[in-house]
Length: 359
Image (cartoon, rainbow, N blue to C red):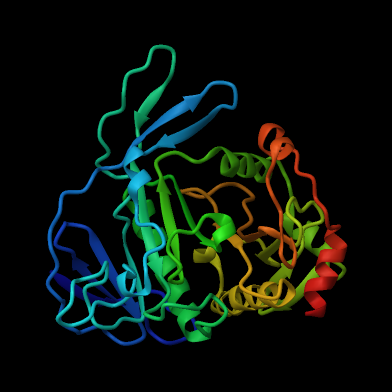
């Protein structure tokens, strides 16, 4: 089944279309692009898939962690010929995207940790457990097997943001309390598929870190004022109402945040000018990292927006955590960081900002 439609919100002025296609195993695939997608699907085999895992409460950290044993056997660094995120070849086996071409794709993760119909959790004496309900989706930036948020270009980044706006709306409407689009990039981060892609997790409950941020904003923390104080010394670039800066309290060497200068709860609140600038900045920060670290930079990126229904004082950011402290030198999260949450930062934030500005 396929259902094409035009999104209510575009980025950059051009309409963005979405085609919905139900895969043979029942998972949803959405194809986004500036042109309606009309190619015929390539036949694919149906298979039975697991329905998520379970979450268990950690009584000493007051956090919920997810257990999904079926992910242990997920696809691991396939050859180029077996790239599951590539377009399907006519006459060949279908990939995750059973079409010969596409602009940008979002589909339900085959190896989902969270699932809307997650199986019942085990009953453990003294430990709170629940089914890991929610959503896990994969965002494929394009048909090209190599590239990054920098190299895909501004038009594709606009489609990417339009797709995220659509997914925020849909996942919140489905009952998710928190939505986290993110990207893992590089072997150092543990990436198992090198085709350029990101992911979206929809959580049934707000994760601990995001709840702490929501509480801080509700308690009066003013990021808008902090950005004004930090700029320009800690700034990297500013455009269209979006600032790229190294936080004065960064935990990672060369950590960068993108944030509207005026408080917004999420990208859905941003003006058209801000969204276009955000699309540019996603590519520009990635480009600067690759230049600074002399090659594709291992980086963790995530969109930190307000929970479903909004949150008092919340200020939207996109946060970049590079896993390098210098070219060829990995920033390991070792015992102190892992056991205490106290990060040891090897580069002063003001020096990091200057280095990224000078690229």
